[in-house]
Image (cartoon, rainbow, N blue to C red):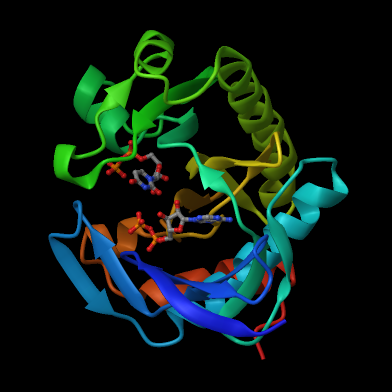
Length: 237
Ligand code: ADP
Ligand code: UDP
């Protein structure tokens, strides 16, 4: 397998083609952004931590029967994945109220959500990723009805698996975002799962150990990601 041309430069990752049409390389950069790219910074070691973190989570999910794009780690900041036709929607699952849910509905941060809330957002930075529903997805053909059902089902199954995994490490999985894509007619989990795209709080103190540290200017961002990795037993060297 050989690395070929750069296909896409996102806010946090660069995507490369390979000599195999069904495979891509994801390069996790140190770039960090928030508020639709308004706040940006370079955070030492973040690419490496997120690459390892994502590999660990994708492997745990695959073991639990979730179909994912992840193939293998290629180095400190890169991973080999299956090339997907990404669906332009983001799936968010919430176990505790935080972020945009609090702003939208006026609920108190930290409120336990039972059952968990599931939401779709349109992946479109220029429009600030607006919330959408199944009717929009059907009308605008962003996914088929079967894919909508499958994205919800997989997202909630992933929530069950990861809530337990993080609980064993003394962490609350507050909320997270997933992206899915098509691979030869099958729907697979794509993109990444890392503290950049989820909220994780210490179960006892509710200390934020995720990207909210960057959004809120709390400092110690990568140190918090490393703390989570250490608790999960993810090797970082
Ligand atoms: P953004 O596009 O939001 O700035 P990133 O910097 O993380 O995000 O860029 C990674 C891009 O690669 C995202 O647009 C994501 O949808 C896409 N992507 C992730 N996994 C795959 C995959 N397996 N196949 C094709 N595209 C993917
Ligand atoms: N999220 C993400 N990418 C996005 C939007 C949200 O990874 O473009 C994640 C975010 O980190 C959080 C969850 O999805 O874990 C819910 O985010 P929310 O809707 O509360 O938006 P926020 O207030 O974080 O912008």
